[in-house]
Amino acid sequence: MKVKVNGVEKMLKNGAKLKDALAGEEYHPGTVVSIHLSTEKLVQESDDFEMKLSSGKSVVLHLEPGKDSELWKKHMAKMPGLYTRWVNRQIAAVGAFQTDIEVNRDRRRYRKYDVFFALGGFDNNTTYVMIAREEHRGAYGAGSGIIGRVTLGRHVIDQMREGDAIESVTPLMSETSKDNVIVTSDLSYKLDEGYSVDTFITVDLDRQSPKSAEHLLVLSRSGYMEVTESTGSFMSCSLDLDTEIPQETHIVRAPGVVTVRNTGPGMGRMYIYRERRQMVPSHNHVGTVTNGLSIAMFANAGDKIGVVTNPQRILSVGMTQKEGAAFLGSKGLRQKRTGDTSDDAVIVDQTPEATLDAIHADEIETFGVPKNRIYKISLDRGEKNRLNSYYFDKITGLSHKPIGALKVHFAFKGMPMVTFEGDEVRGKSLYPNDAFKKCSRGDIGVTNQARPHKGLLGIRLENSKEYGPTGEEPYGTNIFGKFLGDLDDMMKGLKDGDTVYVTEMDL
Image 1: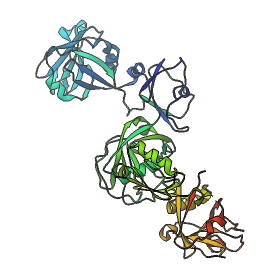
Image 2: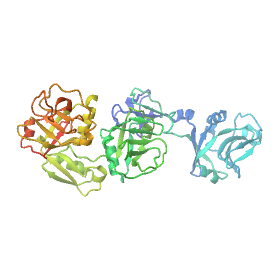
Image 3: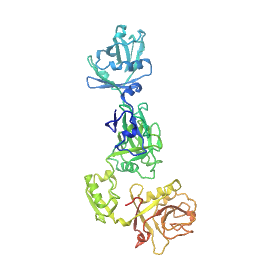
Image 4: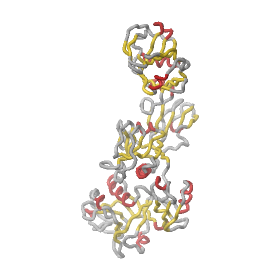
């Protein structure tokens, strides 16, 4: 059987399941995908049909519930090849074909753009489909006969002429109707002929909103984004609200438009709109979904959705200088090495860092350091330490890149700990953990809100039952990580103001 996956046709065995269709495709395990039902099934379920005319134009008919619209579905296959028999000020008549409509000579009122049945000469052997060009009353032999209304392409009705033929009538593959789309992460879901599968959304980024676009690139850096809120108007992701977003481009928030809030409560929240909403200064335009919109339309809170951006992120941090040169070169960008410029040095900083700024830069500066000067750490990211690890990520930059930086606050030979600069304002949100009973060499901690120097970070250099990594007593200390590198090596010659580079990945 034939199915489409991300717009490309695939041949699968009858009875194939979703996992078979995803073989070899870009798909992140655990994300939801959308499945569009086949056209044949849509004929039974769709309420919107596109009628293409020989003039090259088309109109969309939205059905109204009732026996006449069901009769339309039964006979719509007869429409292609029929043509407009006559057009006057009040109606355009397309036909004729045979039905079993009972003759009913009652008069009724027709609104402009109503679509209805009519019997020529009050004979159901010459049944017509009429389109009202203006509001009027009439008796057309089919009772009310109301099929539906033209909702799109209404200007075409004014341009219709005798002899215009109907070339095709097809149900619309609507991405805004749950009747037509299934969103699931169940890889055992059984597919059928004509189904269409999308595994990710594609977002074309707004080149005029580089900071907003970078925020989306960070949220989706693992290839997917989590849905934290889902309403009839939008889905959103609120996983990184501690972010400063300047005002950038604003547009009307139509379905598929991606925005980020730039001020007030919820600053940093990313939205994908499902319904049209007016333009507001508090929402920057990030980009627009150009593929896979149905995933964003129907994903639920807690779902993960695959995200591909255009352009894709340009970040060389974590690569060697040699790898960075090849990576940037593949994007048509020129590298300028600083710091340790040797091929094996690891890039810890890139300027400019934002992708949409980097694209337009004359050159990309990559700052390297020897691999052995980047130290491995492990953070406790459980619920107990969620705020602590989040704070650490923000201070070091690990929130948006694989290698973070700690600026030394106080380092003195013989001291039992080394401390690093934090952010006292952010530190106000660090609630006290349960008091530790012992602090071990290598423990990473932060002074919590119970003490004056809240937000100060530290690493313990000696075991202690009385003091933590920042020199505070147990009640004023939150321990949330472990330094796994060579502490003695790190401390050699370390002084106030120096930078220590840390990472959770294997280099």
